[in-house]
Length: 202
Image (cartoon, rainbow, N blue to C red; front, side, top):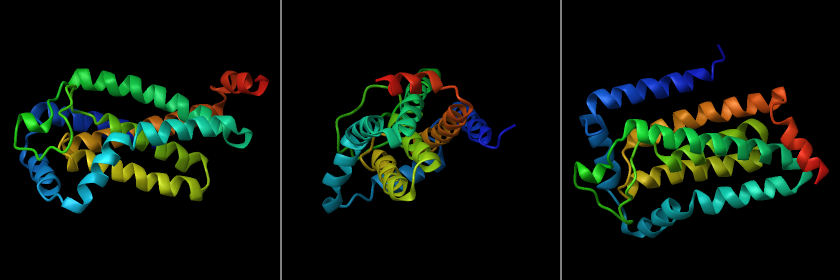
């Protein structure tokens, strides 16, 4: 078994623990309060912007740019395929787990409007974590290191603004890492070759 499958195993184990003990367990509550209850006024606007725009407004344009240029097209195709898989598995996981947001259990210092979907895993952490991991596996350091930092900040911001438990973020990253490794490996095996041929013709 490939070592990266451990990420999926850990994700499943974490999901089972959350189903058994709930997200409002002492560890999750403590970590949430440690982050959300210690907001700094001069960082609030920055964290809100990260939380609102750090996923779509960074990763969609980036993916488009990677697809435009020939030298980065393979990475762009891999990234797009990885995002599609992440969206499907992320949404399925949310509905299977059906975990409510933290503000339904404890006081939350909300900086953005309440989302109405389920909490686990974090869709933001899943997408940005997936993107950062794909780039780390397929692109030079000057590109993936800044975007890894961005991905970590976006993930942190989701707890900071009060809409996710820390376990949601951890779950999102575990699933993201498995998806990224899986997609990159399948691309190297030639699974995405038909898509790459279409782009070559275009």
